[in-house]
Structures are given as structure tokens and as C-alpha cells.
Image (cartoon, rainbow, N blue to C red; front, side, top):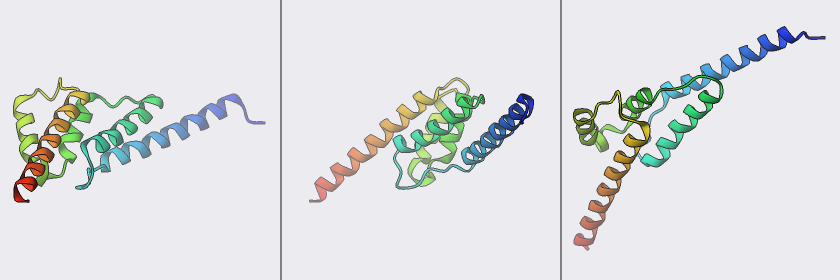
Length: 120
């Protein structure tokens, strides 16, 4: 029969391994060119929630920096540079940065729609 202590140690090792896998996934995460801000924010949030459930909190500061670093450069270089200049990234929340990036993405989409309408 397995003792309670051994089961606890085994559960801790499993939890630690799962956390390690999630943190590796977080570190490797990149936004695809075809992905929306919403979808990528969802993937970041999902990893953050899973790690929190295992007792490891990913701070907003780390999420914000990861988000900005992982955006496709050619599409987002101007907004990232602006946000880094204007905001204090140490105090900016993940929700705030997500909202600002979604607004930018929507504005770019509107501009593209207008250009396509004018070309027709």
C-alpha cells in the first residue's frame, strides 16, 4: 500500500512537471501572422490560468511584456513602439494592453476596408 506521504510527493512531482511544461509553452509562444489579437490573448490567458490553478501566478508585467514581444513585427512594430514609449509597462495590466491592441487591430482593418472600397 502506498503511504500518504509518497502519494503527496508523487502529486507534487506531477504538478511540478506540468508547471514546467506550461512555462516552456509560455516561453515558446509566438503570435501567428494570421492570428487575431483576441485569439493570441486567449492563448496567453489560458496558459496563465492553468499555471495559476497549479499555484504559480504569471504576473501581469510578464504577460504584457510577452504579449508585446511576440507580436508579428511587420504588422505591429509602430503600435508596440508607441505603447512602450507612452505606458509604464510595470503597471500596465494585461487587459489594458489587450484592449489597446484590439483597438489598433480594428482601426487597421477599417482602413484596409476603406482602401478596398475606394479601389472598387
